[in-house]
Length: 241
Image (tube, rainbow, N blue to C red; front, side, top):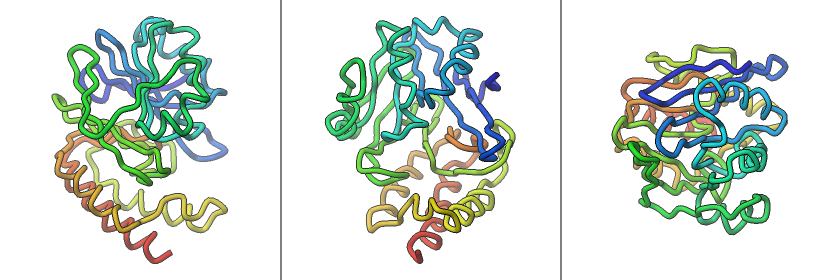
């Protein structure tokens, strides 16, 4: 069963570890008037996630299912959630909506533009377009302004069955994951373009306190410094490649 951890007030991390990949797949549930699921997960993980979610909310009450970019571990199970939650609305970037999501999804997606805010009730999420960060033209991120949580998708990717939440510097583990990926058939899974540094600087200036990561430990502490460190590491790793 998925491991559930509350990493911020009413923000729950539902994590499934896949030993064959030595990798955690993390999904985030915001418990509020209109609950938000961030990362729909792989289709094959739906039953396990659904069972875990039932301990937190009634899954039929999900209000939004959001993701960063169109990729199976972020959107694969979307239609399963939409089938059981009749009021749930998919949420992604405008590019994601018109290029991929509306053709795939059972219901049209809410295509968010830069600086738009999505309210779940108590919580308010400001949207940031981040094309090609971490992957894909359609990529974007959401920042919850009250608790200062950044849903940062594949940034800070770490291998291993690691702790749910850490205040330790994630840079070394992230660099090691980059190194492993660059030596695999999945090399160049991220790029460092002429726009990457500016986008990371913009995210750092939000001064997030919690970084909700898709793979590996989430982080609590000086998120600004963590993102600045990541920018340096990404440039060294991917610019050279």
